Length: 475
Image 1 (tube, rainbow, N blue to C red):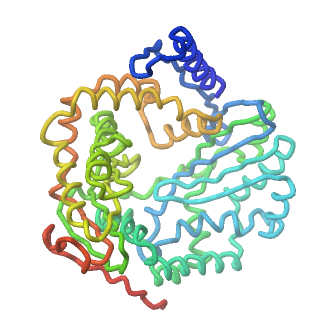
Image 2 (image 1 turned 60 degrees about the horizontal axis):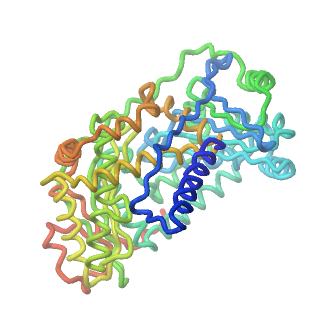
Image 3 (image 1 turned 30 degrees about the vertical axis):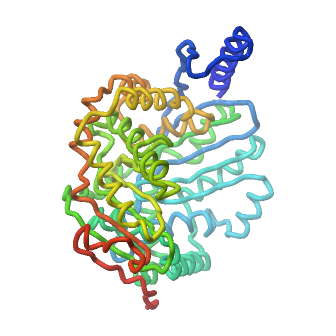
């Protein structure tokens, strides 16, 4: 963090010097600066007695310690008939008490110490985090260890969490943006666990024992990585961690269930959700790439040029030139364990729905026809390379990033080589990547709005499947 601040100070100082030399009238368009050099912060990697990798970064600026545990689990591993199990498990691990400490006792003790312990489970990762004053760290660490390894899953809190899930399902069709995002994800990942969403039936089928079993299956020291930053004594910290996590397990490491990659099928589909609103929500996309794609750096450049900046092609045409939308963007969400997605999105007035869809598809298709300009390529590279340092703004972000790279199996030297790999991308690389990975003719198109007000029927884009947005009764 201190290096980052120093770099920014040097830039401001250089600008001030140039401006003063020119009587305060320096033109920012013609100014030049020496190359900004930034060394990537590192973190120490150690291994606990139990075999768990730990990344450490000491920082004494504040008397605070942060820990994040990354756990190899996720909603992709829950039974199809119990969609929502992982999310509920992740929530109740913390809210349901742990290690014999009741939920109320845990809440009171953490609040008294000004400490925080949080837990959650996403599609392909579980996390449990800790924030504590250094003086209260030992006790907070014990609670953290209990939440991570010995949650009690209070039946009362299980019931409350299930009710919250069901209430969310009752309101799931209130927001057109949420509808569009959910249905696009379901369409792209049709038939795959990543496309599953909770239902009333699945929510009501989840029991406390399901949560206990799910936790027991995945939350083991041999399936975790810790990221720790803050004001700690290294020797004392490692002794406490070894006391909490113990010795290696006798049983062999648990293998994750074999979940296949989503099928690489590209078939167009038009999906319509009727909502009597004045603004139409538009989402379109298809399967994308994984982190192992050789085109990953070219796609980062393409993202910026197509829809990832305020001067992107989508923004300049649809917002600035045509005035059809306030916001429009696109991006490849690169999959770390499973194939990710390409998504383009906007909202526009109902009377310009068809025009906006056509323009978006045409602009995206244009990326596959001819190379980007020299100016576009230069601007994208400069932005990505120069903003790289902002991924290291705090000790916690630095050490957690290092842990995530190991968690997802990135190649050694990924961060160190990132800027160089971006700098080597050519216009031809971007065009080739666009042609390989952009398929506007096979978009899943989701439109939520009032078709009676559209400027053209959705059938102009293909056969329409209408969503049933009526609230289904709870079983």
